[in-house]
Image 1 (cartoon, rainbow, N blue to C red):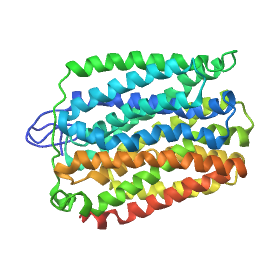
Image 2 (image 1 turned 90 degrees about the horizontal axis):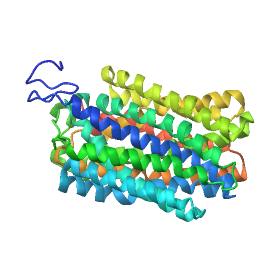
Image 3 (image 1 turned 135 degrees about the vertical axis):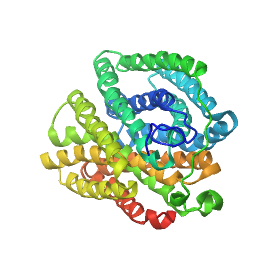
Length: 412
């Protein structure tokens, strides 16, 4: 539908004629923020292996601390959003990130793995609030049929954050590791996060963020709003699909540096730059292209095709060598649209259950706490290449979800 006519909903226009583009632009800054924070996390795996002398299996708990917070905080975040609205949920999330970033700055004085993990947990609790609110909020800032396109556009900025995290933050972290105080470089990027988020907190506090309800597309919803969450198959299977996706994503992101060092024989500094520029660069490019693709093609069909490609690419990655390295980079491009697309497909048509449903889908991000230790254990006893069997299985399930989504949703 056109975005130019009052009374007709469109990409950023509601059916009552209100244009939500300015609100959408403000909310996308949150996607950039948590992308940057998550990009930093993937650098910490290799950093702690070197500075704290831990195994790949143990370093996988960096992701576990992060994604466990998503599991534990998602429902409380959803309840807070229902109680205080979208704006209230955003303010709470930003406040927790400031606290977590300052905790992490203080943790550099202790050099204890558990203290660092605690800081990551607090940060992730704040990011959980933001994701629980911001993801579904983008889906209501215009027409229901364009929800997948909007969330993919917002997630493109998330991809920019993923690039900046390892490139900018990683530079401080790895350079600091060369000093006598091997963790001295850690405080700089997290102090910067605390300052920037404090400014964002002030901006959101004085901005207008209306608490909107979804404009349901009845012909696409399949009556999910009337049936309730637990009798809505496309939602229930979507929760598991998101669990599988985040498992695959976190495993690939966490051990990209290890894979590159093992197969391409380069330093950790070079590998982290490749992660930022090439890996996350392709990730962002994939979201840019994906935003356009899901605007004209059925979202579930795009999801299916991308997942099939990634099953093949993970299989090639297990072979190693230059071809395996190229395949690993390819997974970044083809996994790029999966999180927002699964999210949009899962909550489509939930009506008054949208905020709770969003919370439960965010809870499924706990999959990211499980795959990295499993992949790390496989790498410790076999090789990093073999570990890519784990994301290959995860992508295979997403293929199935994409194929059967129309039947599950009762969509035309």
